[in-house]
Image 1 (cartoon, rainbow, N blue to C red):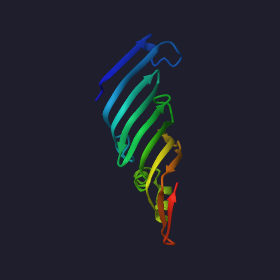
Image 2: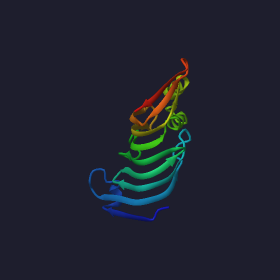
Image 3: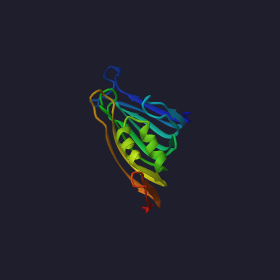
Image 4: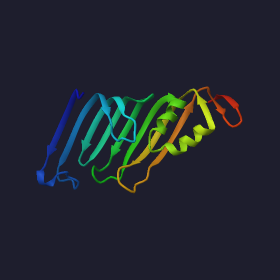
Length: 170
């Protein structure tokens, strides 16, 4: 659903997309209850709400809500600096989920390899708030970069090999 939107186009059509500053192209619109199936290797994102901005040759999406599997998106900024030219999709966001559900989400993505090894070794329980900074490849040969931090609140885990429980992880 797109409840509201605006577009500004100023300049000669032959100069579009105005990367040299010869004109202005701006399209801005609100989205609500949007579903995004952006890549078959990634889980769908549903109930997205926020603002989409196409400015000159780039794209910026500021999300205020969304849900993917059992991961709640509280806020996110998605950027493609130059459509058709950028090698990466940039994502910065704040999420909340159960620790196990967040790791299971990661297993459904191309970033699953390190998560598989972690879940082979430990069994986590509890909730977490996650701050993510992702650089995801759009072009062949581009590499992913994943940075993030998780705040745990009274979480627990069991080290499987030792059958050792660890509690009150904050």
